[in-house]
Length: 462
Image (tube, rainbow, N blue to C red; front, side, top):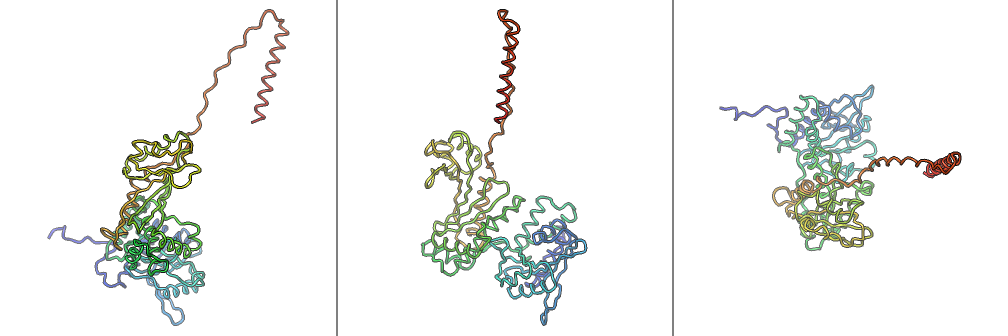
């Protein structure tokens, strides 16, 4: 019997996980233990909920009584600071199990009754708009106490970012965090990344291909909403790779009225067969726009780069091309000019490398921006795996960022240079012997005073 056959002891074991109840209990206990033990990770989880800096404590399956109801939330987090204690209830779901509206309402009542600060729900459900809860609840219930939601994908992403950036200073705490990440990555943990466009995907996809999709068709709203989830997950995937907080781009209109924004997305999907989203990577030149064209079966990723504000048109084109050394030759570049109507000239990167003038329609019109886009095939399948729509979108975004976006730096004007000192004025010529000395002195004074007055006028003018 060799050591290779032995199973290594783990801080958070997955062995023995049976039904969904045991899975949820293990996941909740593991998460709360790490929140309490790893200071930096605990702060990353609790600060967005409004928790202050302080000593963290976590408890599992805390019992409460609300009239005839005997309630037992999956956990409770407390932060002690000074004489005050900040408290949040925690409700957890794992696997394909979704949060239940009635259960959340009961826990909101407990939160309000005991004057707790927040209720945190955790499941594999994602949201397209930050701050929106995946379960629709009556407004009076949500206004009574602060309701927050985290997906297991978000929790795993935050843990991986803390690990990649070496944010955890204590070696023992860093090891605890690594064990938690390993636990979440195991299939039996119940923490699942986004992997399904929903049961209505095939119907909506086929209707979009034949241009027969209608805003009232069954499942179209679900598909439009899940594409927003997919964009959010694409941002998480990039965050894990880069160790940086990549975020989905959300408009003010979407934040004000998510339901209205979703309905507009449904209308656009029925009319054009397209789904739209965008993600922003910190310190990049612009957001990455993502378009899924279901009619054409294509994924388009694009970024718009502001052109330099000086130099000839070919100089501005070459400025961009020099930064795309590793980009694929079929990358499409579209040039936009001032006062342009309609689309500008569009050529591939290979064509532009051979002759930058192909992007210049009229040399007298100033080049203002370049739109770079990369197109790939959209997978038809609803789930993950080879040939799936989810994987095709994730791969398209990651490839576009890796090959194109990360290499582009925004143009900035050159800083002004210090002028060289002007040459020292030559000496005045010697006075002529034909002119009396007194007259010479008077003339010299006149010249001096005239120069002085001119200097004073220039200074006052500035």
